[in-house]
Image (cartoon, rainbow, N blue to C red):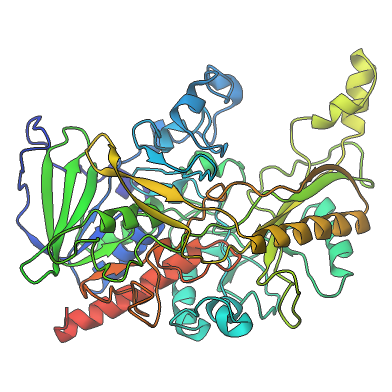
Length: 585
């Protein structure tokens, strides 16, 4: 199927008048084998795997389908936009309460407005929740860094005694990592590091000159190594998709589908089977249950008319993103499930996590300054220093670990010009002939799973469809704060050793949520009293409901979570297909 096919799928969310939410309209009585809620990284993978296994699947997506010709702006220049890419002053700040600067004039339409999708937090515990509602979800704007978790993560409790192990091991998930990476395409290098398992990689991207110099300094420490980032960006043509052309603006969309997004990859594969029904503009509110308390479908509202509708399925797979899936479950109350679907032991919503971020340092490389012969900002990737703490030896001040992400580049904007004196032609010449490399690294650390970090429904505030908003309570523990001190000092140590003149330092962790790696709240486990899901991402109490997005994480590890979510989804879908074949679902 050509890449463009999915973008042209007809809308299957038929309009029925302009009814208010009070009137229920049954626009579909078909019983699907599976209802998948969400069309992003995990929703697309679920649709593909289930459809290819022979199941009929309805995919419910709250947002609209994007048109790459109109909605993608990766090739626009600042002078093409009214406000040169920054947007009208004050407008984005009013629409989005988050302090995360991911939305700009190029891509503002790809993120939800918090004024339309409210949530609350305690005044002294901020949480930044960044959301995207469109076919493809955040897979259109994500950072694409793709690292496998290891048994240092899956069996972390056995390693240091804190919390709970996952109910599966790396060996259980490895075949599904293989399957996902082989399909979506991940570039990277083979490093033979036990804390960072190898993948099925496309050719790795190249280091810049500055990164090679930094690598020599980092690798000299012996216990650590600097590698090129492992990224879901194609370095050669793959599965009918074109290799990256290095425009460097992935956060604005990719018309060639050269990075992984579900509309460019998994959703077309599902559509090609003829078994997928994509229903866009479907704002899911709660899961419907039958007279035995089992799921029978999903209730949703039409995004535009707010008409009330239902979709029916033998199995429900939640891939709506961590907190949206949990909100859906909390709102699925009935006489069988008065505290939320399957929540007999008050676990749903608890153990919220995000990775720590923003602690680190950067500066100017003291060598390699001079005229620019090539630009480095078209490579939408960076460097990675995998976790090296608490592996073979243990620290006394904190458990678990972190990895560094960063880069050493020359970009097209001369930020160094303010430090050069002069005027006129000679000044311009001095700027061009003394262009330095900017180098920076920041730590992405593990956040411990703690019961007191939770989300709950705020029944006093609802979104525009009448669905209760979430109240989010989350803060860092002493463990994360102590880890941050080591992240900061170690960053300075490595940069100094590599010959970087440090011009930027940050010791303070960003608020939870800023990393946009929210995970937990519907965790997997071995005990129904302390977890919501079994090893197959299946709800203990409602056997035909599966949660395969980040909500299912037992602990966070310190690597970017999306590729693990997709592997968990592929594994769960294989189980669903087999259980349905046996007649168990």
